Image 1 (cartoon, rainbow, N blue to C red):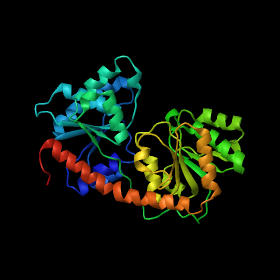
Image 2: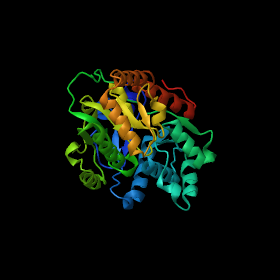
Image 3: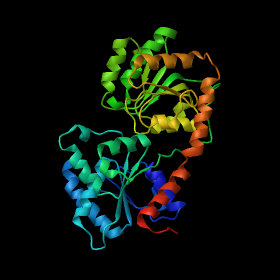
Length: 352
């Protein structure tokens, strides 16, 4: 997302943009190069490189002299904040940070609130990707009230859409990381419950992560390993969405849900947890089906109902309504224009 937004700010809005990455990974950087956006890396291979990376960033800021430094995610926010302690003869830029999650590990640690007060205190504004993220952040740090702004993540709307009559390789598709937060273990139990009701299912799990081996063993223990295709990370998940009957997002918590946005963009029926920012994207029974997070039985019932097709047009209507909502509110051009307006407001200068 950052790559596409930065490239469009340069191309369409005429902003002078530079991108600094934490690690040496430029595999998705071609849109930046095509738009003439310079890219540099801090080469932060491990936490031990952070002091040197902080010095490198301070030098880059001194060289580029930007009006704004916009940090994404926790590691970047720390490095950006620390780099400003080193000062610059050209003055300090306005600092912005994007907050993507409704929780973090620091909220359960002694001194976590003090640390976050200090960290976020360095930023003029905090961009929250959903109202749920904003609400949880303000409950944690009430001092940020008046300095937060909700700007939803964008999604590219492709020219193609999900066809309910087209061939389908899977009954159920999951796309995402294999981590505790994403609730894939809940999905496995839900698949077992649904299969008990309606027979074997074809399920694809597109993603990787530290829980993969444990999840594979769990599928075996449930007797459903023959139904599950652990595909690993996939480069083009939207193409997979066209080949499934339903996509499932079983998250325990979710700041927004980029996979939800991607599924909305192609109009595939969605069954998702009623958690976090997902509830701001989907309306139950109108643009998808929402179920309580972490409840395998309810999720299994929802999947069985959708796949059984009692109301044959319902899933198709959900998909069409979700795609229309994505087109109306979450297009990339809307996001880019909103970010540009924010940049102008925090610097007090109109661009162009």
